[in-house]
Amino acid sequence: MPLVVLSPSGGTGLPEGSPQYRYEVRLSLDPQGYPDPKAWYADPAPWPARRFWPDQGLMDGDVIYDEDSGWALRFFRRDDSPIDAPIQAVIRGSGPCRPGENLTITEPDGRDFAWRIVGVD
Image (tube, rainbow, N blue to C red):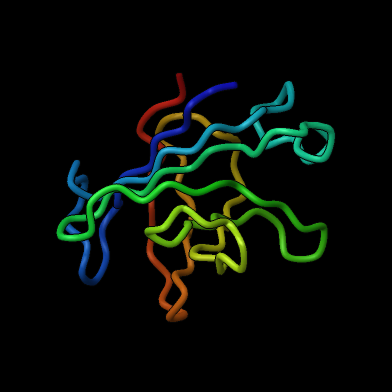
């Protein structure tokens, strides 16, 4: 399953291209390079996600999918309990997962930030 790495692509509060801020997510992609909902539903294991943020350190979580709202990320409390872990970021984008493509992540406080895919390995 490819590792997709996201870095800020500018905007209020996030320095452009800063390696200090990033998301890393593992996604099964369809032949066109889009996250594959059928693979997500069929996979019994969670798709891992990580958030690297200054002064907050590393947060582990997972990728979730909902037919109505689409793709999102959820990060677990420091005690690693997945129970009642809130959705931390909703992902919106129209392009495939390939370097240079942009997407928007809506944080829990409702603010939208632009992110760029910097790696798909």
